[in-house]
Image 1 (cartoon, each protein chain N blue to C red):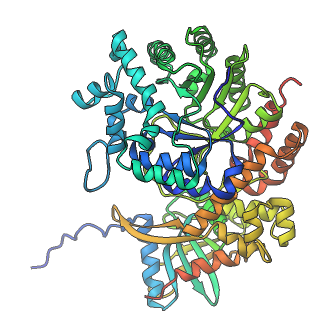
Image 2 (cartoon, chains in turn blue, green; image 1 turned 180 degrees about the vertical axis):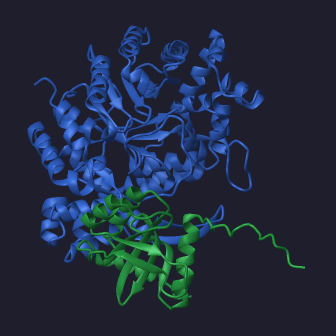
Length: 460
Length: 145
């Protein structure tokens, strides 16, 4: 049975500004695109054109039903014009999904509850609409959308087909935390079954499992989760995993083992598992470590998407960080600078390319004086202002800095997913870099290089 | 008739950290020394940066927590020629002075009198980590008025 997952490397499309990192030279660096339903609802014509005409890559739509489980503040606009109103993209999604989401949010101004899904008919209809949104929303843009003529024109110009269909359908899903585990697990399993009934024959069905770290670490809940999903009559073709705020670089040996155990458990019986927010630990484990042939895909976003909280955190200043390949982590400018100096990368351009990175971006930026030229990855604009009676100065990355960091990141990720190496070399490299860098940059930034090798090779 | 009852003794003015920074900044500007408060340096915000005889100083002000101040001052070494910590409301302890010396960080005390606002308790070592581009970025933020 096909899983709908093309290969190991999935990338999440975040905003329209990201599109340049998915096209042209980057098109061959990844296998599949993940796109959020609210983005589809926000600009369906642009997304349809991007996917069908420009990127021409397999994709899947994350229906984001989990968003209606949180405080409604997360759905509200913060722009001056429409502050306090539900954002148009979410509103469109709510109307498309209908009840019980629509009733809870628009009529009762509250988040959804497990009880909202008690009615079999309502739950079934809801699942049908969520499935229909993923199946048809983009294809409709070619036929009846507001910009259908323009989208068709672009498609014809590029010789592209007119239908954009996701490679799999994700059943509606909700967050499972320890507190209301059973209640939401029941809703999820019902949605999975109704999703299977609504899906067109032959199209793979994905069960998205969104769990808290408590659930991950509790053996009983982890086992119950696996048993229930394996026992589901819906027989999902692939599991999409999202563990709340799971940052591989901050995990202990036991936490990593729990993650590995969960993936192994889900994969039992030949099931395919994808980590929707994963970093190099997952990539290495899937390529030649403990999760080989079990974890069939790892998704990341542009720079920020290797870990994500289920309840969105808004605000904060955008920070461009250089992805240091030696430690497989994005580091603040002062830390990456210290690390590169320690590793001898500033001695000459040749040593930088040899010891740090020789991707296309680094080769074009670092050409003669690495210490000086590295500023192209750290350059900022300073903005000073008063806040609560205090003077505050903040640094914002320049457009060129953000662009350099993002392009470098995409090339490095491509290498991580494809370069020929062995688990022994990976582990030795991590251990060596830990020893070299633990003193100059601290355990906080390099500790994972000592932890990962303890779990990656498994019992082999 | 003069009252024989004197008023309450003058209270010591307690300031916020930024209050101390501002006092130093005003004094430096009066002397025409290029300086900036809350200067950005590789993702850190430097309380006070100043150019003294072509050498870039950074000063991290803390009322008490010298360990935190030392951590921040260490990061300043990437852009400054000399990095200092100025403890505003307590005497530097021997442990602090020892740790600062090990890290190459200098220690200052803030004066309230007119003129140069600092007393150097321990001299900073010249940084061997300074990155030319980071130093240039801080210098661009300095002003004399």
